Image (cartoon, rainbow, N blue to C red; front, side):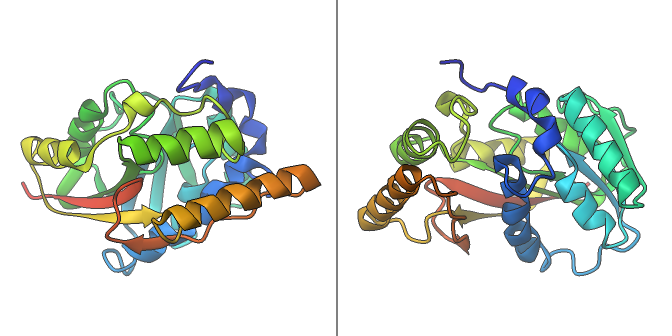
Length: 253
């Protein structure tokens, strides 16, 4: 099976805004992310915001509706087209471009906030993405992002359980070898020049116990047998970074 299959986004771009499709789950995840980041950005009005890996534009439209000045880039040409179409239908002015996360088409010191959700574990060079985010941010600008830890637990949950067994995530979408340990992330943040960073767990299981994982597996398999739609996970922001984690970093100079 091909891993880190990014063709999925081009082939399924028309499903980004379909509430019955897996890509729309990003909207469920974004609600928790922005709730957490609202403590850092209480007012988005007038801020220049860039979303790296914007997909169909779900996060872009969220902040655009809060009166931010929003730009979004993505590698998927079809996803960009869908994002542009949906923004027009929503009467939102969002600047979308097809571009590489490692080579952003913007001048330095252009943005107040850079977002990067569900992206770092997919790119060719995530360290270069950090460098580019730092370059385009203004002084004291915020880099807000999330990714997946690399350990046995994340392989079990994200790959074996959610992808290969329950199919809650399209099989082959992730490559465990591209997941990033928090320790590695901290080292790169420091070497890039970011400071005042804070890593928190983005817990999709609600608890980290084997009992909870067993319950998820049994419920998921039961839903498959009945032909029912998978339930959305409860999300908690806590100190458990063992699977998914969320982070903020500040450009200090």
